[in-house]
Image 1 (tube, rainbow, N blue to C red):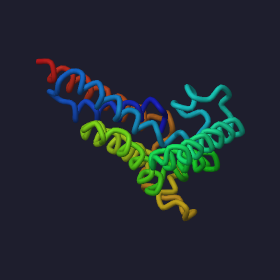
Image 2: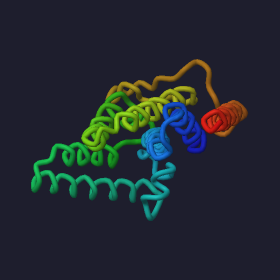
Image 3: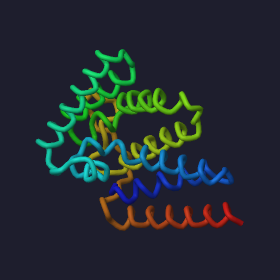
Image 4: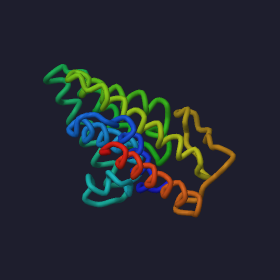
Length: 194
């Protein structure tokens, strides 16, 4: 699935979770859900978020960037002894060496990254953001199960898991899902402010 479809499902999840909450909470929940829906594609140099993070969108630069980031967080862990830094460092190292639809598209990646988010935002009582992030991340994995290549859900096992029904990237099936998600988002917005 393309980044716009993952963004749309993250927005749909965020809008659903944020329904009738205060406006500042709505923005935080929707942002967390969209971020969660896009994070798994950090393993691809041309993923939506990497297009913003990387100066050059290729595998070599992605690997170098996340290795350097990993070493920086490991250094911070040694200095500060904050478990968050070691988790981010390990996640960065895994991003550096993983291929697309492997580690970040697995249950292991989901557990590690949600632990990072939990340590970051739960300290401030932001349970709705945490929930939105997790649901966004899971939605990404589910959508990619409909791709022809599938995902390595049980990484490090090499088996690709996929649903029997497949949608071509940017094909009619994905475009239909995208349109339905946008319509749903519009309906939720209308009912939220009525």
